[in-house]
Image 1 (spheres, one colour):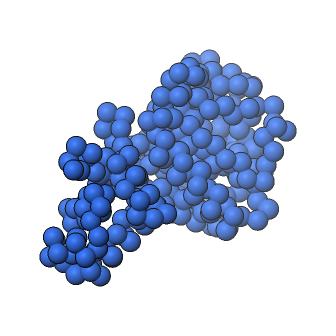
Image 2 (tube, one colour):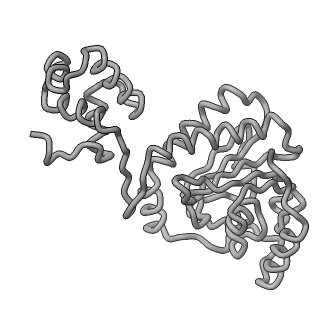
Length: 263
């Protein structure tokens, strides 16, 4: 269950905003990354951004009817990488949310993402608990996305002109669980992505990549034909591939397979 932020933490955040002379009437963010920096951030987080947009569309199509939502995805520093409005026209707002904006206190005052960054935990923030007036219509939940004990991003869901209900909490938790489940397949290092396959699956994929048939793979690895078919099918599901050849292509892209070792 998501709980509201405590009064002491909220008061401390507001005080920091006051001391930093954050304008309560602001109509744009104070901090943005450059276009080149944004391009690099989105490239480094390409898999997560695509996954976020895909899952948002699937879940809102299934569970959302006429309610208005805003979903945000930032990197681990609070830089906005992706957004999705549901049943809300952003053009009607005088405050445009641009990718590359920082959702930190010094950029836009107290908000759910800035608090989630500060306490490294999930936050529920009511509209009038935001520091800046523009966000008063937003009731928001934000949380770090933690993979392998490391914060890789922050997820935010905001609702306009109403309180967050149990169904909204369910939608948020479902989205978070799907993102984390998929991202646990990914190991980030040096800005690259690598998917880990178990040894048998990797060997079957490698033998398939160099042209071996199911019968040949079965004989080489001393496993049944059905086992080969099963692992081929599972790796296609795992990599979200349309067929075996697509799976091989994605495995090379995500460095499951080393081209130098495929002869």
